[in-house]
Image 1 (cartoon, rainbow, N blue to C red):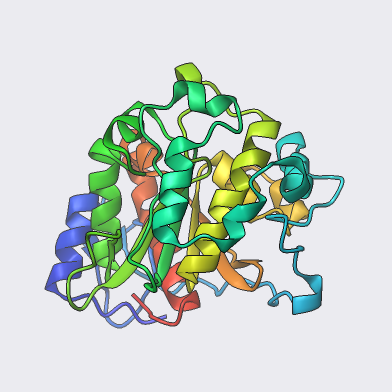
Image 2: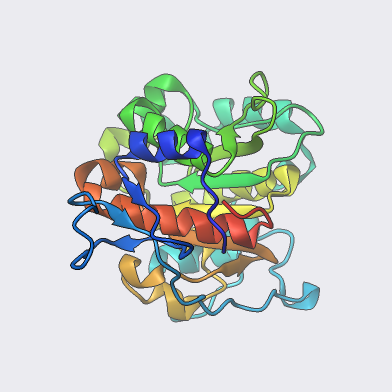
Length: 299
C-alpha cells in the first residue's frame, strides 16, 4: 500500500513521536534496525513493505446478527461478550433503533437503564449532524475521568494524540457542531459504553449489554467505511463475530481486517497505551495504514 507522505502527514507522525525514514521506494512501517546505512537516525521508524494480512471475507446479509442485538456470538466468547448476544431482548431500550442523532444523544444523557449512570457526570455518546455519515468510527473503552468531565470520547492528552494520528491519514474528529475541516474525512469517536463506570471500575456484562444498543445505533446512523477498535471492551464488542480472534491476546489481534456486519474493523493500541509505550507508535501507524487501505483511501 503506497505511503506517499506529504509535509502535513510527516508533521503529524512527528507529533506521534514516529520518525519516518524512506529508503528508496519501499513502503510500510517496522522497527528500525539499520546496519548498512549510517545516515539513518537512531530510533527511526524504517519503512518497508510488510506482507499483506489475510482479510476475512465480508459477512453475508443472512449471516449478520439480528437487528435487536449488536452481535451474534459463539459460546467460546468471553462472559462479557456472551451477555451481548441477548442485548436487544435484555434491555428496555428497544426504541433506540428509531432515533436520530439529537434524540439519541438526549436519551443517552438521561438514561437510567443500568448501574453505569451512577458514575456519570456527562454522557460521552458522540453524534453527527442529522443525515451526516462518517468515514471513520473510532471506538474506545468505557469513558475515563477525563472523558466523563469533557463529555466526549478521547479527551486530554490521549485525545490530542488520537487527533494527530487521524490527521496523518487524512481524517479529523467530527461532531454535530464541529464538521471536519475541508479535505479531511469525518471521524466519529465513541466509547464502548456511553457512561463512566462508578469509581472507574470495569463495566459488568449486563451493563455492556444494556449500552450495546447505543453503539449499534451510532454505527447504523454513521455508516462508517472503517472501524478502529481501541481497547479490551471495544474489541469484545466489535470482534464478536470472530470468536477465534477474541481468544487471542491483544497483540495477536492486530494486522488483520475483521468485519462487523460487513464493515471492516481493525484493532490497534489505545492512545493511552501509546503514551505509556512510545515504541508501539510505529505499530499503530501500520494499523492506521491497514485501516485506511481497507476503507478505500490509502494513507
